[in-house]
Length: 406
Image: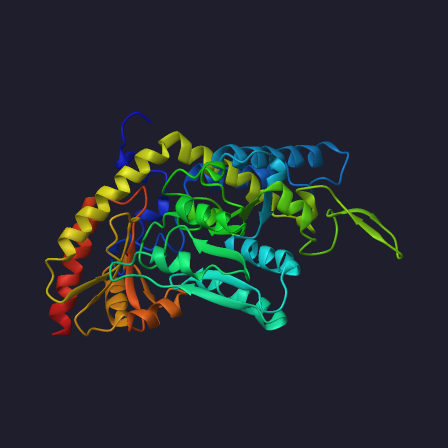
């Protein structure tokens, strides 16, 4: 696309024409899940109507076609994130399962009193799997704090490394603060200590170019549903040498070489980590979602979203009592906020009555909320199809709500 035409793009999303309580929908909950364009839905329909058969298991035409579609997606993902090999691309149910896979399988290498570094801004999906491992093996979590603007304290991060540090797991972008972490720098520091790093890329993958070789990530996880794709599909990238060393996460069909009652051998990568029937329909649709993003241009998407972020922030700061959490210079297009002493739930409920969908609560980041001294926020997050006019509607709604609340 040579010129960014947001109104033309919106035509691909019928849901944006919905009315909520008689008001045209303004969808600002994109950090939780993005909407899905017609081309992705049509890819799902095409798979169900013309190619539905289990993959890697049949000699018949339908099975071969479905298998080809899945492996074409694997290659497309490899290109999209610049992995070296398709053997490094594992299909999962989402970011959460990808992180659990690494915690479970890599966790076999850890011993009592080993340490894992995380940050205070992590999503629960990048905290709880490590805590479960800690309960089994007496592993200790070391937590990187943030400054007043929502930036990681890099000096504190560097000081956390010890002779017992065995792993680092950090989000690329905070789902509450919007902070874009300097992951290339963080990974380089970990590698000085021979410590591998997992990056939770759920909030980054649809907003910026990700090159896993350039950042030198050992693992990188993301979900399709946050990048205009289907639900229930995710990706784990892992460096081949780590994946070869790690034991399987689950047992079952497809991940085996040979099964006997005395011994079982496992399949080669990437199938060693893909037990059972995958969501091959959703996986095929993921390829269409990637193609869709690339047709528009991820750099153009990022520029559009940044413009929305700047505009919304400037308008919101004119509202009396506005408190925005996360003011880092390098930030993605989301704004978490409170207004005076008004409860986030009340604001979210009233916004919904005015047709505006936002997220309220702790956003699966309770430790971060505790560090901020609050229970939760209202979060407005923007995507490629959102407009300045929608932000104007949002600002007017906030002002009206404050009048209602007195």
